[in-house]
Length: 177
Image (tube, rainbow, N blue to C red; front, side, top):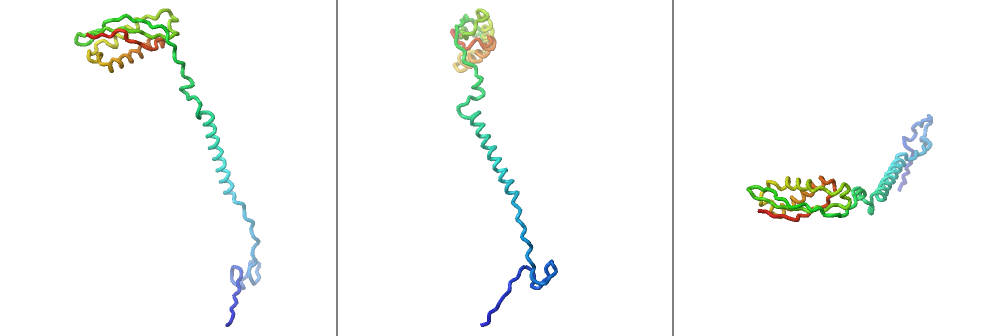
């Protein structure tokens, strides 16, 4: 059995001319040094910088605003005022709708800081009380839910009129007819 031999050559045809002009296999060109992958290093640098920024931001949030730190509203919250004397407002009669009336008296819980200008004048509270309850329907002022809502509205108005010197109000007399 005959043996067949095959000759393998470098790229190109056997006997082709090489760039130097000689017949024969091309001489391999000197191997170019592979340039380092610059894109890979830049990507790695960007990833590392992004990770450092994320970790730095998380650490800053934890130390500045994390658990155990007061929120903005808590940090500047004023302390609860201390109760002082109760100013009694004598009962008055207020005209309601359909010929009915309401006899109402108040006790104003003043703060301990109140009274720097002398004894508080109850006439502001009486005026606000008349404005709030006059002309209302008897069924509305007799209903406990409506009465509580009117009381809360009156307290807000009185707190504003007395510049925060009143901290609560009590109904001392509340009679409808």
